[in-house]
Image (tube, rainbow, N blue to C red):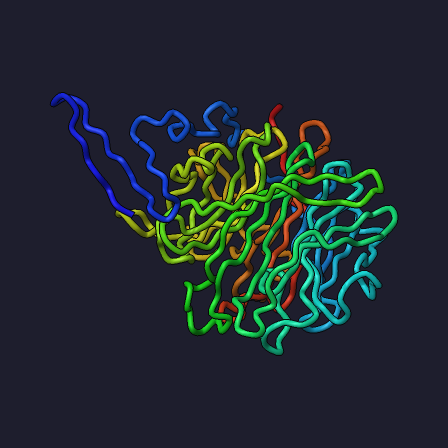
Length: 408
């Protein structure tokens, strides 16, 4: 990668970035595609939200998503040590059901998780560990290593393999999958794909989390009712080896938000970013919504798992900007950021619900109710209770529903 500066007629100076690996030269100083901020036309409404109530949904929770009709919450949970399954439950805590336990279509004895609903409510996509892979330990859904991408028809309960990754055996690099999400129309599928990892997390061969890329494909169901993906493309926004996690499409499905270390910073100082699909195809730089890289005189914080409200007038994410990890909210462009939860602060209801006896509680995956009642908004939240940093897990995993008063 090199920079070349040209001086034209003694007046205009243009910097051209030559990316040799892609055999492409583009002008980032005058390219109108790269100058677009996808959030600039969205309303700014972070001040309309006030956290008014916190309710405990279940004490055996995990990564979550909320169905488009608002009727079901889907999540993963440990059925036994290191073996995760996908469950669904109603927002009132009733009709809890395991959807993947002892499923005949899935590899036996594997862990499954990180589910996400299709907008029509008929399908959900999830990760499933390969039955045979390098090493002799199970891979947590939050790590994604050796996880293929699967989908289930919630009506027939039939499962289909959408994308298979490398098993890391016989000298090949390990593959993996993280956090697949559908577009609002349901015709695109977005996830992150593992390019390379040292497998031993203590070696840090390719960074703390590994070297990932963003994957995007068209999703469709054929005339026989069988789901497929096609026209897959991959993106690597930012500098050098990167870790990414994809989160959500924008309202028109032409762009999406994701977290990652796009400035080649330490992964634990990740940012929330966004780009249009066209920008990524043109190798544009990431549009950073939070600036917590620890580089260029910025303070360094861990920012991840961002989701826009149903009105797209604010977004919520987890951040370690304070002494402990909490949820923060901001306008769509990242302005007016403020802390909104206090799972680690005495005197707040969310702290008292866990009786204040745990030292570190980390709110993580979350999803907004797409069909809230008037004047209210609801967020389902997975919280790692008594979080153990070296294992990156909580000893207990709770799911809460956060209710917000919303000024229409």
